[in-house]
Length: 140
Image 1 (spheres, helix red, strand yellow):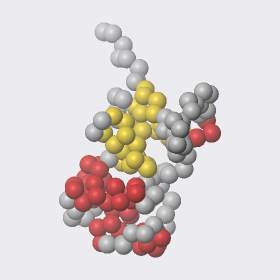
Image 2 (cartoon, helix red, strand yellow):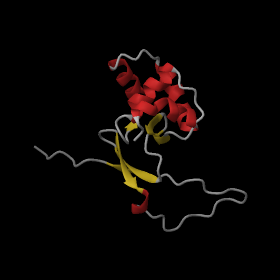
Image 3 (cartoon, helix red, strand yellow):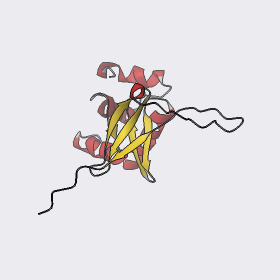
Image 4 (spheres, one colour):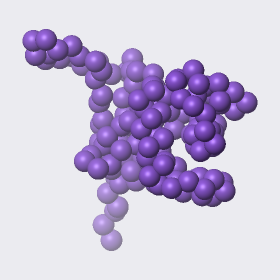
């Protein structure tokens, strides 16, 4: 977890200028420990906290944080991304019914037969998303 009193230094170390909006969004993102958030969720949290920021600025900031290595983008389906404050090697359970992501520690998953990368390419990272559905309601 990032120390709240050093968010500006945290952003500067990542090569980002700590603007008012970046700092406010960073506080909302990193003050609560590891979490998964959509741009819309963060925008809603910002509004509730009295931070005036457009949804476009939230998207831009999340993308800047991801490019700087502060976040990991987890694409669960076309047009649906979460931003993960845990950038350590790990995978995810995706709860289809509720839309929640749950971390799976990297050491708990092993790919038994990885295909070879095409000539001239190297595997950068393996992202595994295991989709789960909750139990079906009992028939009446």
